[in-house]
Image 1 (spheres, rainbow, N blue to C red):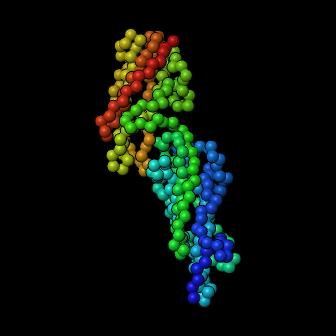
Image 2: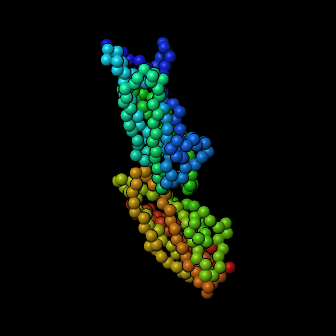
Image 3: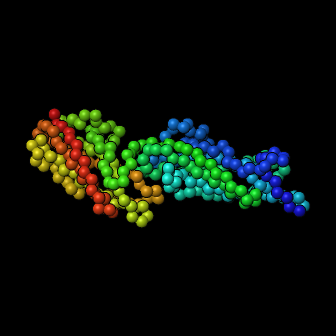
Length: 277
């Protein structure tokens, strides 16, 4: 004779499949992160959770007790778009009498994509109990830091900044240089379109005008970026450098950056100025 009972429930109570103790971590077995912690692109998000209230198939004649669970985890954005390949698995086990209060624990990890903007995200968990024919879900929120973007439906240039080196963290509040300095320029391209497989293709160029309005630099094809990814890239970083000489005239120089979305025939332009003093 075969019986069915639910683990982790009181006698006479309605059995309820549940996901317990779910949270995200910086590393496996580390404490759960605080609500204001920010993962960065390229980081791994570790997830841990437990399951209770599952059905147990018992065959008293054979003295056998078994469970059969399936679970899945997906790291998603606010539109339920997965950031990485979902993780799934099964829990099939034979239980002993000492396991009546056992709650299986599982772990998974995801890598944050390179070109995802700062914002709020979540890990969606789902468990299916094949014996009790029940399901349970849970969501664990977390934050990603890094590049802040303004949502754009068309091609845009955002976060334009000047710096004295290649480190994007050292943006200048006042774009002032001396003749002979190298002018570093950073920006982010957003709002481009995708082809099949989340493929994108953008290009950008730069023109620099002297204080008298004459061209100092004209490089219309400075760079092209063509790639694809599992998660649709929310931005593409752009980097340029302008080498001045000790004989460069002092005054205000105007930088004109032009970006093209080669997959959708879009163009965007940004004009900014720096000075040589």
